[in-house]
Length: 497
Image (cartoon, rainbow, N blue to C red):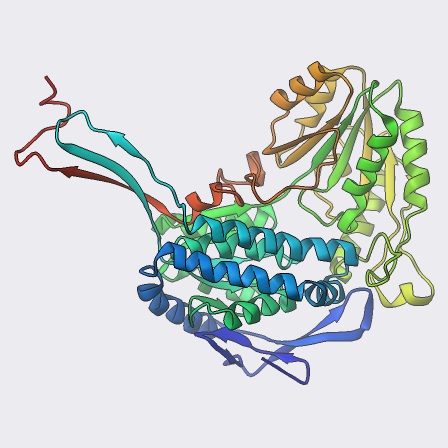
């Protein structure tokens, strides 16, 4: 797979160069002098070869007993445990987030793989009584075929595992295109799967630009499921491309997540939650805390406490254990963040802290920005409405819970939200009335676990969920089976008396 730091595509159980003969460098966002690896600049021809391999492998893989498929995944998970530290360190080098977080990313892949390995001995359907005598009714899951996955750079092993493992345990085969900025983590996952017995062609990887490869990944008639994580704008295009052939599409897209802080909240806890939610992963999470709705009686104290903690964060190279926040992923994302900071200033939001690129010394070799907090933000401002995907937090005020809930729902997105309060009635009211796919009480908007469904509402998703058993519904179809052993014609709804 690796020669002189050059990585190949993985197609049909072989590590192969792109038909284009072209490659692209992947550099460390904390130190752009460091080349993490050289990866294939794939073409539609490479995608076609990967789909060919997946379609051929599907013929046998779908017939492998599900418990056996689960046993293979169990071995993959156990191997990832052994490889965790190496994979985490390489992920920090290619993606930038701090080493504690990349360890968590790999752990999430481990958790999902173990979880789905167990589903190999479940994949439950139901049996139910028939309305007719001497007749047996049941439901079973059946796989769909080839699945195309387009995955993001912010969770470069966890999110691919969210998609790959339920697809495989259901009996499907996979072609995955990792994000251009983070192909190494998926290459590491492919290598583990190869060495732990996943048959050739069952999983395939092509690297390169989504713009160049997207149509090929979606358009082939043999692709029956497309799972995409990324922006709402691109997700809409994916949905439209899948619609003519009625392909399953699972879309996990944007977010503008809110943390509500009521006047009875434990402010110290709420500050720690906001700090982690807004600046963990440098704010580059779909679930990142982007908005705070704080009760006006405590907002001044809350902002003062939060700003002090944000200003003390150690920003730098994530491989250093003392660093608490890493860089933006690339120059484009840094420019986007800095542009939104300027927009916030022009909109007359009050800049509390941060608001500029970090410069000098090692900072000049990376894409670093100070943790930024705006106060006195109003609901007509762009920094309130639009996803920034960086360490920029907007704070506004409310006078009561009803107003807080109204402000929380004031977004086209609906992924994650949280409330900090000591009042159980307020907590349950917000839990009911804030319209999101994920909700936390006295915790930040980040921190999903693999055994609960993950996804959002409104323009965040299209109704499907990743993780937990909900993911099985994305990668399988229900078949209702009726077995009549009466020896005579029986007509449901007619011969019931």
